[in-house]
Length: 272
Length: 240
Image (cartoon, rainbow over all chains, first blue to last red; front, side, top):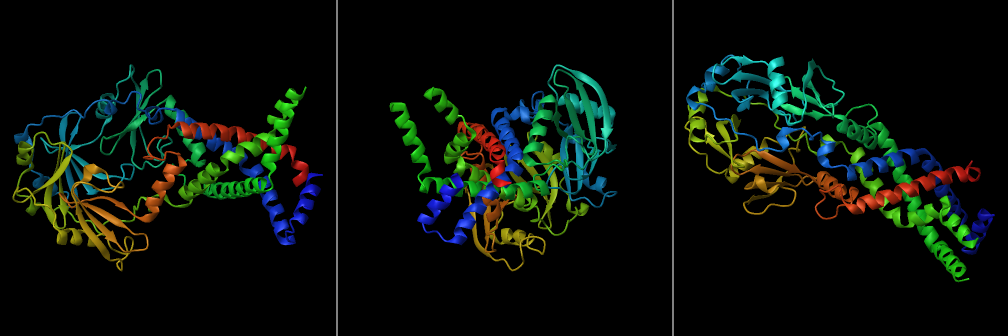
């Protein structure tokens, strides 16, 4: 019935055959693309609402993360004990930069063979004790101390292990990490970079939900830690077509005065 | 009776989808245009990971005659001290109270502000095959002291703003105190930032994802999409 009506009104408007067929295809397209992407569209919206409502700290695992709440406490080193850098580099000629850093309160030289833009990239770094000149490895006791220093929750360390990339919790992370499990209400997991001792971050029950939501929103179903993937390319373009055909449909409804008609009838009925 | 009918009508998938989408068509088009842009443009390209120095220069130990212990003694409150090469000279880079400056690693002297010829020289190092094309020319070089554009964080000031004439209108920002590349922008990145604001519907600074407009629009959109999903079932005979 309605199709006939629409066809009739189309004839009155003297639109030619081609544009009529075009209009029909826009609607058929809207129907089928809608059928295809509507579930993902709902997932985008639901995860979007989740990001809107959940505090940033909860998304980023900051609940028990110490670094967020206190100023980086300055460590005072004994300047006369700091070794000259030049002799230390004779055995490591390929060094682009040397940084004096504090590791568990002790002065350490961090040698970079190539300074990387992102911390998650494979680091080409070595650590040297700035007082003794000895090479430092991030071993288990040191990793435990670094993890405890970053933590301000109620729990204590329940287990620790070193894990190699790829990491489920940090898809882009290239370096080996120390995974330090905390016994607390959020099952906090502290990650320490095993190359340079830096805190990678905390993961917990809250971030498990958040990371799942990110996965849904980015269509990162292969856990690559990126939204540049074939799923989102396909569904992005399809959704673009869906929304544009929908926009056309709304415009057509407006031009054909379909919205006004409905309001009028409802108003009349309400009066009666 | 008529009231129940009316409620039924208003709650029908067709009515909801048609009416709610009247208000939502434009926001949803914006979401899908911006979202498609984000996923189709490689994020590494957007953040211009390709703009990098061509080769790595290593520290020459003969060039470090001023000991780091003396540097530390001079600046015991420094947040950060590092030794690095910049335009083939060795420097200690010191970060103190949010400000970054250089000491000559040979003499221990405070390094003067980067001059325009130096800034041009450093910029040349970023022009090679994988980065900013060699044909690109610097069309504008200015030293910004007080105010920078919105795309530059104020903490980086003072900076040399180096504008290229390539098709993406690439800009490099070099710190005037250290000569380091502090940030960079090109038109695809600028568009990405603009689209980000539109995507999260934060039209002032584009930084708060927790705004009410986004929440309300998304919730109405959920209702409307569910109605659309029901419609695909109800209208299946028309399209099969």
